[in-house]
Length: 82
Image (tube, rainbow, N blue to C red):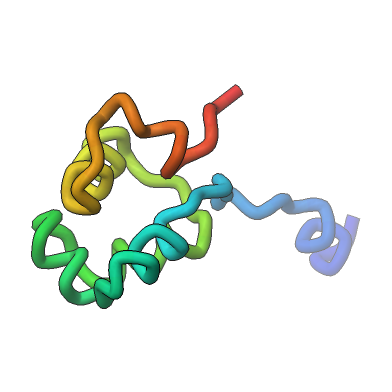
């Protein structure tokens, strides 16, 4: 198999998860920078999460609480994982 065939067969390792972080954040008129500051995360991390990239459970917890929600509201922010 040639190099082009190998590259085409590779699947992206990045997992994407649907979430409502951006929608909720914008509904609160909060910037990414403000959410990042409140959560103790980087703006880059917030940007990645909003784009649907996978993140650690601790990161999800920080985001949920920083949006002023309860941990029991997690399904409103992040979809249930299979």
